[in-house]
Length: 213
Image (cartoon, rainbow, N blue to C red; front, side, top):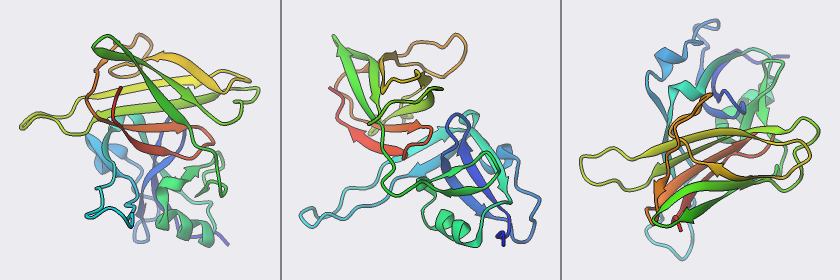
């Protein structure tokens, strides 16, 4: 038996779920991303309490532009899947059949290594534990400044690409301001701490802090 419909806000490129909304009162509504996130969706990582840290560090918090997002009315998930998606949305994906469900337990995670040149960081390498298969895998990487100066917004870079077939890395990927057919290259300042969101299709979403080499 399928669960009541709900809305999943997903990354277009990789179908990772970044947020969910109940649509119990309007089961066919809620599919307009422009109404749900007119400019950005704020995504927060899980808060982790370490026994030797007091107070605990605040979780990663990033703003993902609406241009990267879709709102999907999910109608084909089971009751158990719906419960799991609402309890841990960042560990879930939207499938081709319109359902949304958690990734398998222990799903591999991508890592991003920033590469400095002089006083800037123009590139990164993204790595997955095993190869990308015969079709390759799309990825999205969002880099956002952690602590901008007062009264200034944080800088943000968005890079989309693909780990090629039968490879486990995309090496020396140029950091861009926003994705597109002719994206603007946008190196970030060296030594400025950043949040990094790395999403590779079929892999667990990664939200990390990077001290920036």
